[in-house]
Image 1 (cartoon, helix red, strand yellow):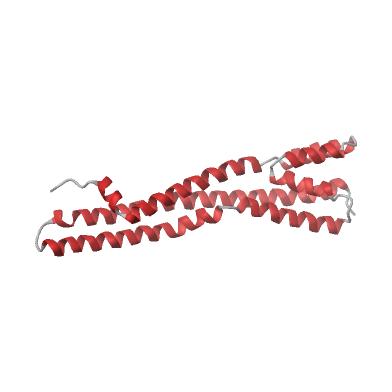
Image 2 (cartoon, rainbow, N blue to C red; image 1 turned 90 degrees about the vertical axis):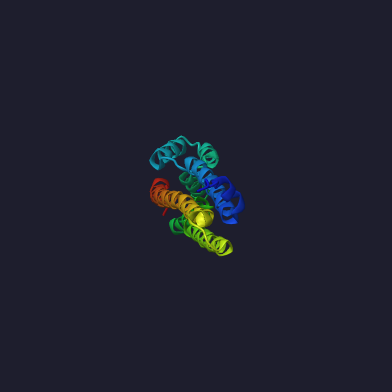
Length: 204
């Protein structure tokens, strides 16, 4: 029985090429979101304490400048609150709520790509499996007679496609769920910071 050349199978299978491209996209967005969430995270209480100290010292401009340059989601919410701290409480609550929604959209950016990869890539692998089985039967029909060697290439392509689809989809799903959990956590942090900010500035 001849040895199966998996590299040759990869080159000849457009399904495996699609899966390879999907894997690159998944890795790229995973890394991009990792760096984004790393910058977007901050300790809300520590930030509020620092802002409160600056306001007590009459350094409102310094508080605005520091919160603006800080890329953390809670910092951006506090910065927006500082810009409008002179407004009535109900108006400030609405403004902070809209800012939280804006920051959440930033947090969720590109996550749909990872979610889509996790949901659709297995079907791409399944399609490759079907194509491989079809090739195996085609080779068997053309050969007329023969043993496992006749269909080995097609079966190998089918199994590799299945394995490739799962290898891309499973990490994408895990990363997507992890980042969505991170989004929920940061969203709660923004809500908590917003509530404490309203008390801190004494909005009425």
